[in-house]
Amino acid sequence: MFDVIGRRRWFYLFSALITIPGLIFILLTFASNGQAGLKFSIDYTGGTIWQVRFADPNVTPAQVHQVLADHGLADSTVESTRDGAILIRTRPIGLPSPPPSPSPTPSPSVSPSASASGSASPAGSPSPSASPKASPSPSPSPSPSPSPSPSPSPSPSPSPTPVSVVPTSGEMGGIATALQDKFGKIVAQPQLTTVGPVVSADLIQQAVVLILVGSLGILVWIWFRFRDFKFGVAALVAMLHDVIVVVGTFAILGTFIGLEINGLFVTAMLTVIGFSVHDTIVVFDRIRENRARHSGESFAAIVNHSILQTFGRSINTSLTVVLTLAALLLFIQSSEVRPFVLALLIGIVSGTYSSIFNASPILVTWHEWEQRRREKTLAGRSPRRAAT
Image (cartoon, rainbow, N blue to C red; front, side, top):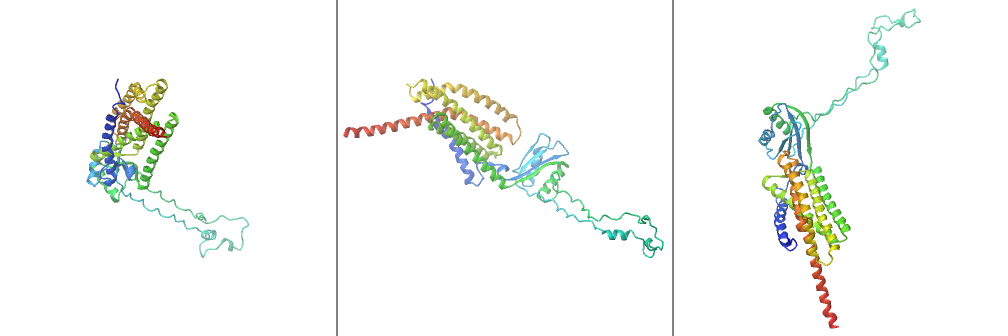
């Protein structure tokens, strides 16, 4: 029988080897002012999202990226969408403001008196009312045209420049002109937006709050479920291990290959946290059952039996998810989805490892530490009682 608990120090050492480098690169993010460590996408740093569709459907993202690089935007990401458009993400670029709308000018109004005078006969001609024999019946008006309306009619104001209008001025206009000179006309522009730093700060704050609230809720629930604070802390430590592994891996990859953290990364982390805790609870639940069945055995032996009994289930469940994620990672080309899948893949592998080789051994280490402390306390009281 494999003794997981007896070799727990080796598993602690392996966890240290895979978390400490990640922690170093995470800290480098702040020490190097973003030059090393984590690389954040425009969802966090702010930037411009531009989606265009060319008349030539054979234009590739690599060709568009080359034009952007010639204009000093080599760090931009370019990908093709399902509907054949090109999606560009780059640093913040000032968008040209639409031309000012002219204020509506009312049409000149004509008073009713002017209307009446306008319909009168020209000067010098005899007026019908001046005739000595006025007819009692009304005579038709000799005016050839109807009188103008007395109320002003405002002219319609032009609508603001729509998003579909391709920029022609400023830096964005220069890039658009260069793209059209090389690849032909841009026939559609479904999206052109700039995310400012205020939005990015909100996203970072929401991500931190979500993870902290989720961690606190997990701690309280496990504490209540197992009636033991140690179970909650052990699960939280294993979960923190998985978070550090995922974030640290992205910090290392961001330093060497420029892998960015996008808006889906928060979703991936919350999923990893949930999966890690779920796998840990399966082992904890078996420990609680075995403590009632094998009350005469040591706590370390009970935990080791529980780990081995749930080992096959944990591996099979995780392996099914890992194979699916590996297939997605190999065949999906989207630059938005691939980091999300990679984070899930790393987190689930780490979560399976930590629930078996970290969370349960931490329980045993804590339990043995409490026993030793209790024995020292009792041993210290015994000589004093003998002396009295």
